Image (cartoon, rainbow, N blue to C red; front, side):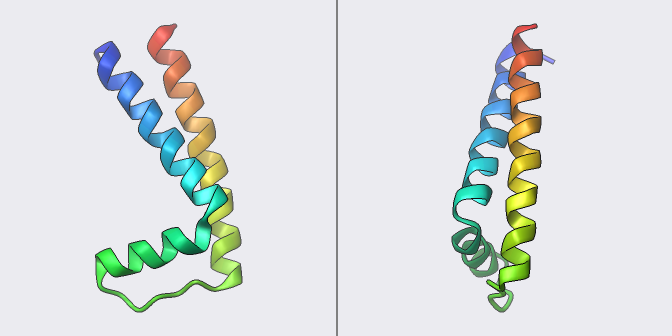
Length: 69
């Protein structure tokens, strides 16, 4: 995979992860609007979104390091 693709993937994962971690209920509302499903910004689902955000941040850091390594 080319350097710009790896770097772009890492940046997208980092951005998505930070959005999920910092604003989980807002992301849930936006996703429900995009997918035309009822909004479900419950506290349990928001906690899950934060965990997903941490995983995306970790994967993004790994992808950026792999792009330069």
